[in-house]
Image 1: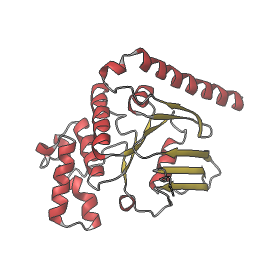
Image 2: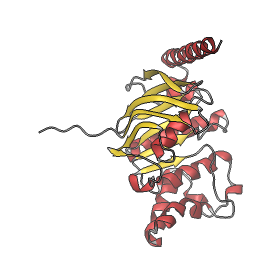
Image 3: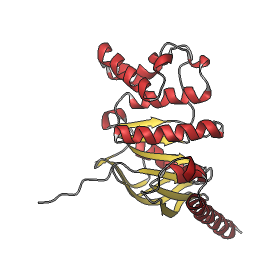
Image 4: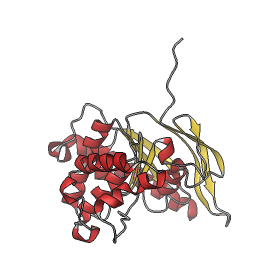
Length: 266
């Protein structure tokens, strides 16, 4: 008898209303399959981070359900124990600790033996190209290197699902492009499934297998765009007609949603 593997992430009518009565997110239905990079794209306040936090188990939906690898999520779920790692908007490194200690932190919290932990830290730093900076302090690193340290910390627990909340948003364009390339390389090497949040149309097109378009007032999903899997992700793609076509479709979807929201409030 054939069985179908559960999606990496399954969102079933999940919504969020806060105790103040504010509706942060209208019901969302979405499936993310193993090995995909799915990007949540939209302006501030559209519920991207709310949805990501529900997938992480940091926030419970007011209604509906979120499943990760077939298991229902809720607050109190241990991300690392369920194969989930989270990369935040800022590197959030401990300034008094060296890079290796920062990367090892999740393993220390899990009680992993020091010898095994150190081997996994070395592997994670090698993956992000920071093996020579293990004994450096965060203040001695550039912004891009600090974010790579944060990514190494997320990889050290050997996740199958990586959640990323605008991790490259504060970086210059050249550094952001390099880290986008590194993320795609890591995805291939580690067979990662990635849910990525951004407000950058160009970043969404470059990284994604699918882009989920969201808009605010209240937060909701308004469109979805698949990016052809045969398209090579390289510098030539960034300046291609195909790239521009995808970007225009996403821009039009965001503008249409914004116009409709403004008219509804008028």
